[in-house]
Image (cartoon, rainbow, N blue to C red; front, side, top):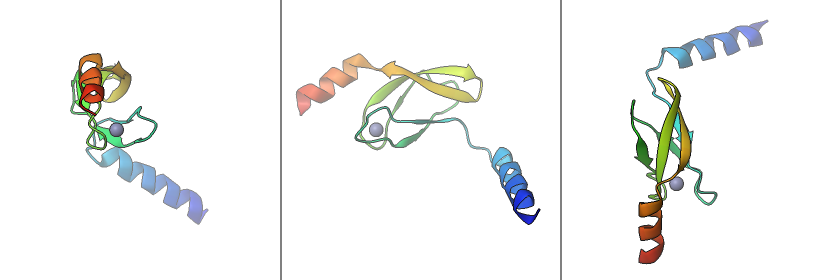
Length: 79
Ligand SMILES: [Zn+2]
């Protein structure tokens, strides 16, 4: 019972914290958690610098739609 209670209170705490949606970087070598500002159309991963196009399932739930190809190409050309 104590376990169930602690799990419950943890999830309550999580829903209270004002974190906006986060996505995982799709770069398999990176997998950084990226915080997406509300309404953002694209984000830049602080881990690897890749830019991702964002769509919103719900106003607070972002998903990565795909890479921003222009910046992806530039990144590869620079390396
Ligand atoms: Zn990354």
